[in-house]
Length: 171
Image 1 (cartoon, rainbow, N blue to C red):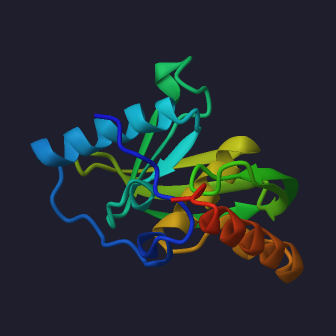
Image 2 (cartoon, rainbow, N blue to C red; image 1 turned 180 degrees about the vertical axis):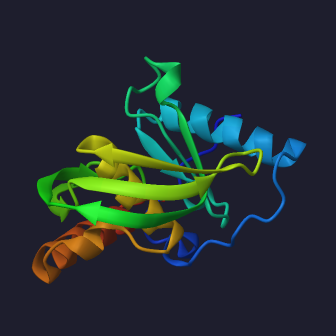
Image 3 (cartoon, one colour; image 1 turned 120 degrees about the vertical axis):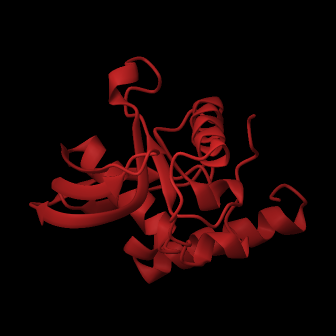
């Protein structure tokens, strides 16, 4: 099932998501499958559960955009345990469509998370994967990428969104 993407302004995007304690359930496996389907439909490389209105600590990432099944990652209760270096690059978000801004993130990130069956694993990513780890973990903590840009740019984006809302072009 493809879920609609929740847009900026919805409270679920700014709340810390709840940890998952039951693994391997039919409900959890279906949610993970639906999240990948929703992410691919929206042409994203990562999706956090709050972005589909589900306040749980689950994110999916596939920087190959569905081209390489081996790159599909399920992050349940993820935690960044190490970072190195810095990279600045243009970043966008499915919950803030059409907006893109330069954001500085760590160049290399190690994350610890659970798989859908509950198995704990660690993985290190660089470049786009490191950016995705940080971006999706931020979502699970109720933080959007615009919190990493200047207050002036953030305010300009918020004003543009308010205009879109008044014109019924943002929901």
